[in-house]
Length: 160
Ligand code: ADP
Image (tube, rainbow, N blue to C red; front, side, top):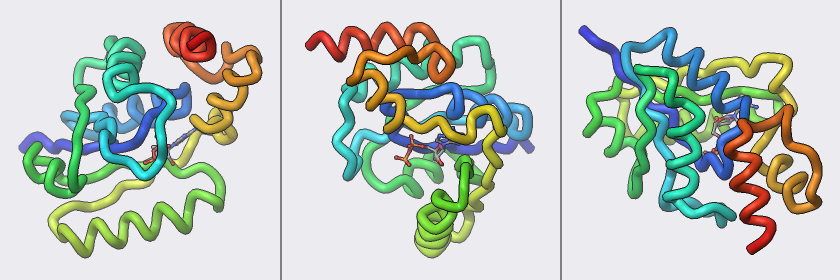
């Protein structure tokens, strides 16, 4: 039986760290939905459409990753998609508390879904969307952190 996973996030914007996790998830699962959140407590700088379109471009060479957006409760979306698991990336201990809480809540809401944590590769440990946004705001070089199309989108955002 084909096993499907959902990799959810805000992806504001998608970074090389996210791409690494998505590709590694794609090597473990038959199908991975990279699910971009519409409803988020965070106030994204990029629109949902932009976040989805950048993720699609960056992951277009990975055939079993599909980029989609979702709104409402994540567990409902995952069940609708026939998923068995969530994928989340873990960087330092600072991610741990929040990620464990999220996994616990999702498990309580929907025990049929597991959360699988993938450890960040050491070269991407320190990359976060918030750092990338801050560097973009200050017009710094983003080459090592994001795909060139994301860099271009952030330049355009800066000029708005
Ligand atoms: P959210 O708003 O749901 O936290 P993000 O888009 O910030 O969404 O991140 C989605 C997931 O990707 C989270 O599990 C986060 O820990 C993980 N992640 C973010 N950056 C990296 C990175 N550099 N390496 C590995 N995992 C990462």
